[in-house]
Length: 152
Image 1: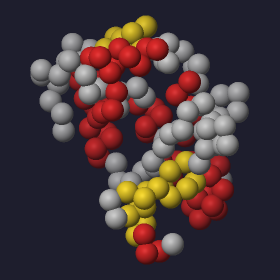
Image 2: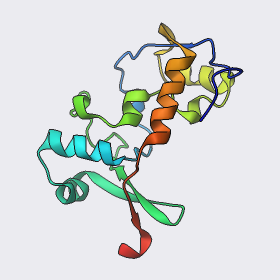
Image 3: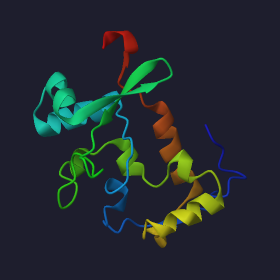
Image 4: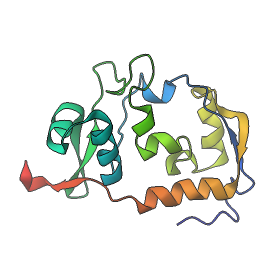
């Protein structure tokens, strides 16, 4: 777990989602799913996990196992993007906590560079260092959906 004290974001960061969908579209990406994410999406879509995985997911090799990820459309849009998020109420934790991801919080320079493609970065509401730390802790606490590579 990160410690807020001394982190460049300890005094907070400014971000407000502009609902531009840039984080959901146009570029390849991986949205790994936790067990909680999968349950929420299955409930929202009224699907059993096997059917949900078959229609909406792919397996990504990672550290000797495979992790469940949402599929992308051929243009790299999220499988659930159509004039906006079609599963917004049940969207995965990584979508709910964007842009407070470890990869975006490596340094102030990385954070500020994100404003080139995300108009919400450095605009709007200030999120405290404690709130950002909470996002990171929630990420750490997730139990991800995995399978052994041998089960292909």
